[in-house]
Image: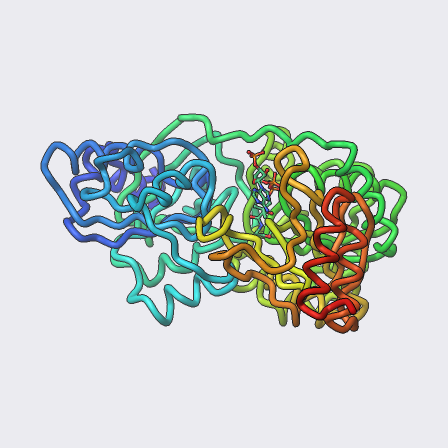
Length: 433
Ligand code: COA
């Protein structure tokens, strides 16, 4: 038996044994999304409940499945703190059982390195160890470097986690590990609506050959991707690897050949999606998963030319202030890397950023373009950063427009049902005379 395998065997434990290595009041941090260590957390929740262990905090960015620790009544034992809210922790946050920590995605590692004291425990799911003793961070490398600030490092080794390039953890760093073969979470692709196709077509016209893209999740980025099939030599430098990157790469549209940094490589920090996406990134040296404080750093993003950032929002007011993370005062998602990429694109030669959304929500009963933001809404992208706004009604560039010009431009791409009402409100605010 080689040295690393021997070390692996010595550190291998059951989830229940690892659960015993936690203490009351421990601050615990996971890599993001589907790399949350499911078996360890389940055993920990069982032990905390059984033994009355309290005050543990579990920090995670974007939970992707139901977990026992999130159930009502568990919060005294394990309090979940979200770096990005999803459908799985929204209710707990709205009921005050979980909490939200605001931050740009690029800054989350900086918070852990410089503001917070560093976690007691860092844990995550990884792919099986290679012959050199390394585990790949799989589908998320976002916070992986924070493990170096943690007092204890626990891994959950899962053969269904793809082995990706860019970020690895060595067995010699690990305090304990468990093995789990629970299939990692798969997320079906978002359907593409007719409006998404219209929006995707408009944005695609603004993208030149050789551009470097950031694509988020959802129907609109997928629609943009579909409309890019006749482009050449596109590159990817994006926080998320979305399913449509697979199609564009297989079609030869994404080559990364014209990138200024990481030429020939797709650079991302996390993914979740279809199994076919996990199969594509498995053992694929063309894709690298790197920590988010690097990938989302606007100065890094700006080193590529023609950076195109495509994201969405909840609402925008007539001044161009954008709320992307709350509905009124209720946390709905998070800032994520929206501002990181908008600022990176702004600093890139030829860069452009797009915020794209359907002009009205809830069966066209709520306009997403508002005179002023709904009371309690949090501004994600300021009016000083905002660039292109796209709805199925049209596209406007706010950069360079005065307040009055912005109001007129935004009303022009609002849902027709709301244009009169918006015009009256704009007149009242003396934005339109
Ligand atoms: N008022 C009330 N409800 C609204 C609303 C508004 N202004 N805008 C949207 N909604 C509702 C929708 O009707 C929908 O409800 P439903 O699920 O009951 O149908 C729900 O909110 C989600 O809206 P939708 O437009 O489908 O959201 P999305 O999946 O396109 O995501 C964001 C939009 C803004 C939540 C998402 O893009 C985000 O989190 N952005 C911030 C982070 C970011 O940009 N990161 C970088 C890329 S990864």
